[in-house]
Every structure is written in structure tokens, then in C-alpha cells.
Amino acid sequence: MINFNYETEFTLDNEQAFLDWLSAVIVSENKSEGEINYIFCDDDYLHKINVEYLNHDTLTDIISFDYTVGNQLNGDIFVSVERVEDNAKDFNVSFEEELKRVLAHGILHYCGYKDKTDTDAAKMRLKEDEKIAMFHVEH
Image (cartoon, rainbow, N blue to C red):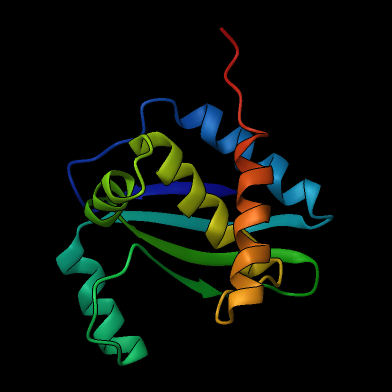
């Protein structure tokens, strides 16, 4: 089960569309859905986690704690809405597209994709694009 938790004023407009899409992303990687919690927060909240748990004194858009067991994806994914907004401006994309990229990014880490090297980061970006293209809302 995927859960959305809010530690800031932000809320997703169409939660069910995002839930359906993230579930489809998991299935598309031949994984099963366990307990995944997205926690939407601000820069200060995520910075504290970054310092306390990862010993990184920097701002970031996402931190994921992976509790995956076998093929079943489980974990907590913290997303700084402020970083996503800033990154969307920096990359000249909509907030929603950048948010989808970050949400997929967390799942892809659980699937085993890395992004520490240039080669791995390029693969991750291709996978993110592939998963973003899967998102659709019925009108």
C-alpha cells in the first residue's frame, strides 16, 4: 500500500491518479507493492533528516529509506516540496513533471537503480522519463 503523508501545507490534487501510477511503475519493474510512505515536507524538515541520518549538511529534494524485502518494495520516501519547486524552475519544467520525476526516482532506487556515477545517473534519468510517460489521468 502506498500512503501520502503531509508535513507541510502542500497536498496532491489527484491522489488516486498518483497512487494508480506509482502502483503501475512498481508492476512495470516486476516488483510487488509493500508498504511505501511518501512524506511531503519542506527544506528544513528534510535537511534535519539529511544531517541526522546521512551526515550530509545539504539541501536535497528526496531522501529514501529502503526496507525492501526480496521482490516486495517497502520504504519511506521524504520529498521536499520546496526543492521540487526550485528544481522545476531550474530545469524549466512544470512543478507536476518534476514531482513525478522525484516520486518515480524513489521507487526506482528501491528497484535497484543507482545514480552516483554519470552512467548510472543517465540510466536513472531514462527510467524516470519512461515512468513519467506512463502517467495519465482519465478525463
